[in-house]
Image (cartoon, rainbow, N blue to C red; front, side, top):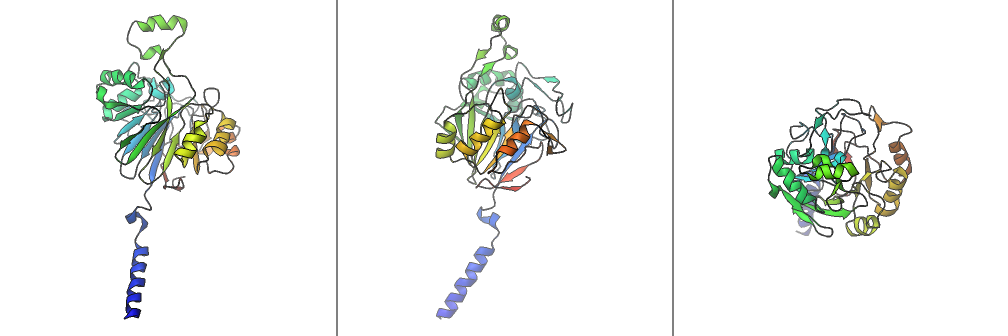
Length: 326
């Protein structure tokens, strides 16, 4: 009797271990797709990322100038739009008419999107929720209405708080940057008052994000920033981010040296994706020698670096390992 019981137990274990991992959630992945100006490349104006949870919840980060409006065939459904700041290259003061227009070094962003912004137009067209910090929620609420959406689509989030959309948790992180609205987005007489002095309208601090997905993956979206102690204390120690998407174009953000040091010494993720390089970083999908992107890749010695080649979907498990598309 004891031998039979043991045999049944062993058989049960064999069946249990034979169950495909996906059926018990081990193989669930987060899909991350860069949406740049040119297919298969990492180009000068590229900012946007589409992040899809395994439960289907989809987030669009920093649409900028390289998403061809709400009708861009690469989008599909969008649940949440995230915006790090209101500078034109992030909120979208103009956009491409279609993918592969112009060159990687000089994308043809010929469609004007002011005063509404590409962010507002896409959010209105997709019925997506916008989650932002500072006073950007008030500014974007007005823009959503101008674009045919509703002010109710915009939700505020302050530092230290969080919002949850289905199985995805969203928090914002302080950055060190400027956040002035160009007069091109303004509709009132204040535009005429600001332009002669080269001034912009301030909408509170911009922000980065930490997004925690249902498979356990935690992604840090740096936004435009210099070094901050929060990279270590909050992003690394509190949230324990496994994947970092780092802006590293220099002058307006950290440069490749600064960003690489932040990754290796402060954030310490399991993997990193460079962004906001402000250059034609690749040709034929390979890093161009002498670029800032090549410098960043060389300096990040102990962590896998995955290039954000437009339209190529990368899949990450809950530990930050790329399991497909990298």
